Image (tube, rainbow, N blue to C red; front, side, top):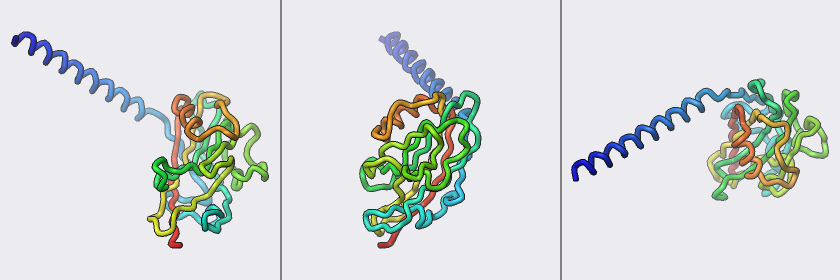
Length: 198
């Protein structure tokens, strides 16, 4: 009986050791993933987002102008970029997607201000802006419920290892995120804040 228990104990110890080793390798790999530096003239790190970038729906009266977004170059093998703006604090149970942009050519160094207005045609050629949680493609600015503490708006830039992700203007943000999970070489993030009293 004691031999059986000893064997079970040895197997358990090896499993724990293997799991710990795998977790350490995963953490090590993640630590080596290059980080992009993301900047914007309109949004400072952890700064309050200006009315110009705020939505003009649901009681908000902003300009709904997407911010300029710049980033440092991606690593070797980068073939395109993607940008998302996501509010994890939205009272939806799943956050809120404000902007989903992908297939940005690797040669493009920025998204210019107001590129989120599809009619303005300011995004780099070939770029796709897909449906946000406002139900339409293009940029939709912050507009949290009145009285909430300021929400965090995560502006994330992804360096992507393929020229094109599958999808058009009608693809859901979650499907774009699913593809990015498997094709991201590096990423960087800038977080802006916005809240309103009424």
